[in-house]
Image 1 (cartoon, rainbow over the protein chains, first blue to last red):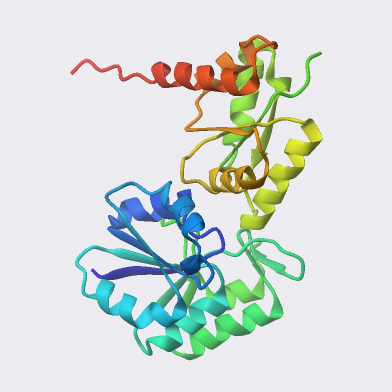
Image 2: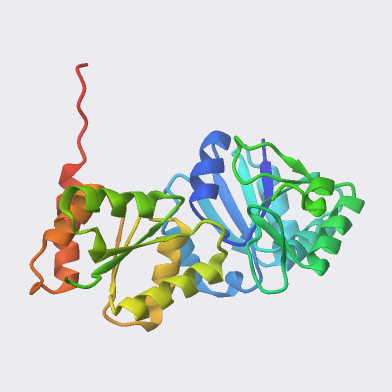
Length: 163
Length: 128
């Protein structure tokens, strides 16, 4: 199954990811792509604390994505790949052209300058452009906080009519 | 009336529900303040918790999931706020024991005893 989910979630590893997605996907690994986290042992330990021991957790910088992708794409265990923002996901996708087919927007929460699009998605103008850029590369971008929810297509996210 | 003694933080309506249940059973729900992570990003959860800790002058936080965003936020707060106690995996039995603890007991000790009580309250009843 290799990489089962590419997800943008500003909370990164948390209950919704580990339990909500990790359980039905039978995830064997969670990879966080984040330049700052890749340099912080303390933050990594913090995130590892909440992950059951049978799930491998890795933290890589964007520059480490090709190596990461080669490893986990060949792994039989389903893997969840997380970024904390849309810009990092775009950089990730550009690092491994055509490898990322679908991106799940799982949670981009309120912050000054962001406009609410869904209950769990708030975007700045730049972030809207970034998600469009992802889509222009052939990536199917949908929002879906948990597996039981209906995936919301990018056009509907940006329309902001489903708040 | 005694003041707030702890924050109860977690997912969805879990914090409100637990505090409501504590109030229903003991009449002491006012000793706890619920804080839900619904709709909040990582920084907002941390900022919200910091604000509540200062507002109510408490150092004990109960959370639901060990790896949940509220728990992670409390762990970040604990990096620069000394004397804090975090109890995660909280259940109703834990909170009931905590609100009944003697006011003269140190909050951290009361939290530890409450966690022990909550742990023993977890049971499986089955006829097979």
